[in-house]
Image (cartoon, rainbow, N blue to C red):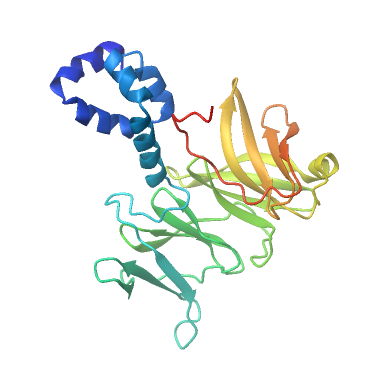
Length: 279
């Protein structure tokens, strides 16, 4: 949207409404829109607006809020592998209903496979995802709006043991990502929801990272963030034992760097962009 279009819209809308719309915009866009008018600049630089924008971004985040993408309703779910006649391969799912303050069974469809309880689910774009507990692991998803289970794909690698830490699933750049650690490398894949295919992102040289950063070669990495800087794509990684070092991998030069190291890095999480300065 150009400056002229923004200025022509302003008289048509009350500024309070414009402010509510701007709260939903990313920081990069808001910084550009400061040049539209003095009123917009004053609004964007006000402490009240900056706090409101940050609150909105936090409430609409994807990684860890179980929310129906279409209705905005929060939907905590509870899954467990039921044992009994006719339930050898079934996973039972219940959802908390805030209107009745009770748990209810999801009856629209049952999970066609047991989910693997060894791994935490991953939330991406209104769906929860799990590895299945079978000889050839698949990726099973639960749409929080339709409350239907669906096998979206087989995993893009073979010879998988679904009970160890050699496979990793995560939300990477708001896309589903899976990876597998072998003896000396970890291959990371991104899922394309459009054509239901996996695209290889990169391979991590575990021998090299072990030598450079004293990270045991048996420990896979958890991808945290993917971004582009100066036309170079970089990947932020964290050892799954949450040890002492964060690692950045340059996807073009295949090099590695350690932006942060400490006795313990705790549990790293991605932050939300904010207009609020720490200075």
